[in-house]
Image (cartoon, rainbow, N blue to C red; front, side, top):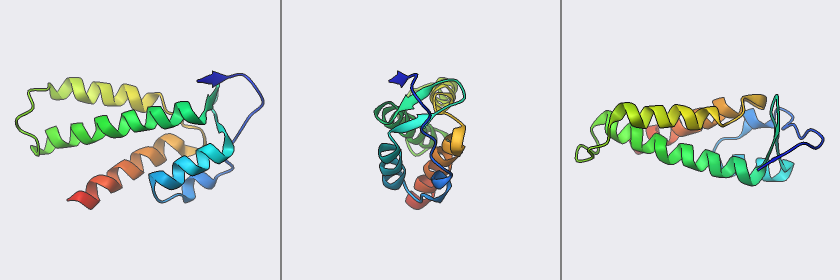
Length: 110
């Protein structure tokens, strides 16, 4: 999950990726991302991002009425979504890129 070794910045390349496959490849290539307080291994980040993506899709389905049969509390889902998003470091704009790519995926399906 986390390490305390030397830094592994993504050198600004993260802003250039256009989909999650490219993002995951880049994170794997770099071996992870060093946040402001700790280092995140690639495997950990990919799991956290995937969890966020699943919850994001669920939240959008509930919010747009695409899945009206779910009895899930919308506030609960969005709270979980924010908690998962906060697990993704802001360094190298990773958090923003994950959110941006997630929104693009939703737009493609509409």
